[in-house]
Image (cartoon, rainbow, N blue to C red; front, side, top):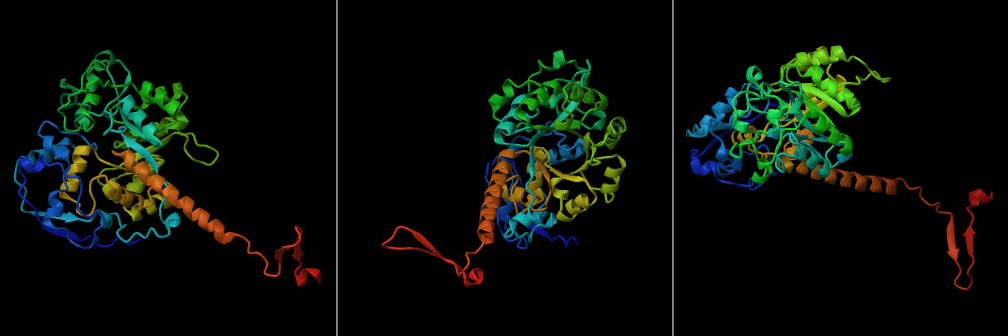
Length: 429
């Protein structure tokens, strides 16, 4: 499938100031505008989310394991006027779904598996037991979580800030110096989260009493709720300790493993190469990609990955098709809330940040699994999809019903209560 050229729209943007950043605006006037028409100045100026109002230099959130410097630079730019010209583009066109036709829905859309990115982060604090339980209550299929091995050997669920060289930084999250791996769990479970951190988008009262959980506690909850757990091996040295917890709890079939650092995926595959009777790996792994290299499928194959995880704006229909044809599962993931808000303020004009229209565009690519910050919206989309599938199935059953033979007539006499049947001449003969 050839990817069509992507039109760039040059939009004159207003000067950004504190008042603009603190404005809370819901959405553009028309989420279904034609993707080939350029937006107005008003449309682009209201694309920000309210969380941008509280972003500053200290709120560096490593949303997708890229070097934190890029996020810091974006946040520093908040205090400076924007360039008067911003290049914006259509996300639908980027994903190759701007001409998507859902009139024949059963054949054009895949029923997605829904994962809460670090849980349900708009309802409860990220990577906490409550956040994951909210996902179960919403009707999600699974949760995505991040793990580090602490000083005492305990595997804990935490994201934090930083780069690969200094990941799991605590300062912005908890007001504590160092990284989470510098502490024991006895110390970590007493840490308090900072309500002023811009990356925390849940209600304030959910932050106050939140506790960093162990992987074991989270998996025991998942065992009860039935949620699948996608474990991102965030910290170094996480492969073997994470395997130990999963296997001790007998949850291999309810868990999969992922990482941006593919040597960790390769190590896990080397340690656990087992396949089932269908030739599928029993220990499922996902190769995470941020910016997508041209040989991403070969890289995933080289480390024995089961699935390929694409950042939402690289998850085009043709790439999803190529992933499936190569025998991998497909997975689209969202960045953290701060970086998502920046993306949709500065990059895309045709959909808003994580609303139904944006999520529908991702589903139109045919991707099998989605990892989102607002799983309640995605669950509603899937419910609508299920309802339409049920309607089409009922219509199809009506069409396929056997027609009654024209020569067979049922007649009930007005004077008699017995029913007589006229036998077709062809049958009588």
